[in-house]
Amino acid sequence: MLTSKQRAEFRAQANSLKPMLHIGKDGISDALVAQAKETLLAHELVKCRVLETALLTANEAADALAEATGADFVSAAGSTFVIYKNNPNKNNPKHAVAKIKRNPVKEGAKARAARAKIQREKRNEYFKNKAIEEKSGNK
Image (cartoon, rainbow, N blue to C red; front, side, top):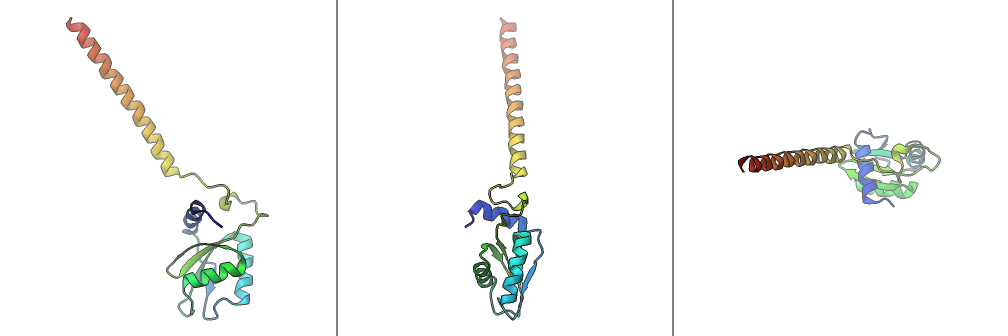
């Protein structure tokens, strides 16, 4: 079972993928399940597409295929869906469940906030010193 953070990470990684499996009018056949198992072994994260001629929706096909292969359902949108199955023999940190990539946007925002805080402190120190000089110069 995937956590919501893992699911979000896999959804983000699946955006750039092209569908590797196409489900047509035959639906979820034994040949499709065998092909899905091989593809999951090789790639771990697989995007699938349900063609218009199929009598299944993307959610129905995803549930059936995930159950038949032992994979986890990640997401479905329109006629495509994504499934994931961890391959312990594969040493690919890109799809590792335990390790989630850091978000560079959030890291950049934190760095900018830290620089802005340092600037504010310097500016406040400057004006404090200037106020002290003015008080001592007037007396």
